[in-house]
Length: 128
Image (cartoon, rainbow, N blue to C red; front, side):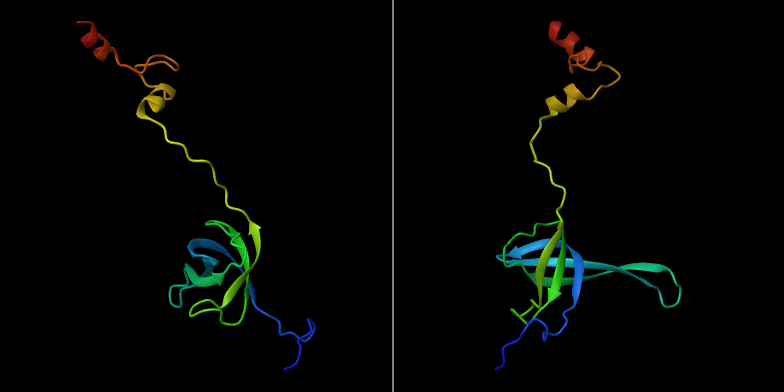
């Protein structure tokens, strides 16, 4: 076996795609979207290729834009690896809100902003 120096190494394909699934430890699915014209109608059609990718550092999350590189077969389906996370996905913190919170914040015809969310008919029924 000969030792491979960086200059004698074959050029590898590199592509950019979006992480669509985290299927296990150190594994992600990356979607590579592309456009191609229809052979007869010549309308542009959106197509996609989904590849299984090895993520050694577990740094890619769903929605991230990643650069991937072709590599030797790592498993039955994985022939690509993550090189870099190009752009992180925009994520926010999820918090549960109740219906009363929504009613207090959203103005309606009956209530003014900041006023009680209880309709006038309900107040009349409770006072009677």
